[in-house]
Image 1: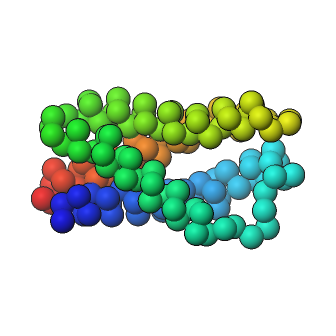
Image 2: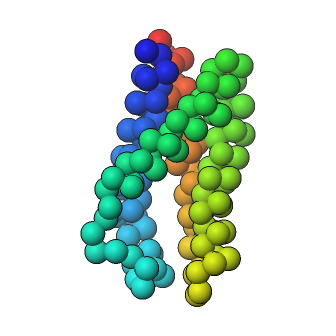
Length: 132
């Protein structure tokens, strides 16, 4: 049950932050640089599957080890590494294989991945520290 609670906290933190990021903060940025690639209709099932997989990984590779070591420093390092590895996999592959993929999108997206991994895992860690 604890794992489900921690997953839920990180999942909804990620979901809310990503909705704000994609819907408001970076909306024009992505529209400017990726207009040729963006679909008019989001495939929500695919997006939800990504959010689930990402947050399972966050739980296993960041949140639980940080709680086990009772270390926010570990969380910071692991979450930033997890964010860069997961988002760089996507963005650097796109940069390598998609003609005219903007490098600025790769950089911004990887930075976003690092931040959202950190923020989502931090909320779960703090939830565990103060409410469990």
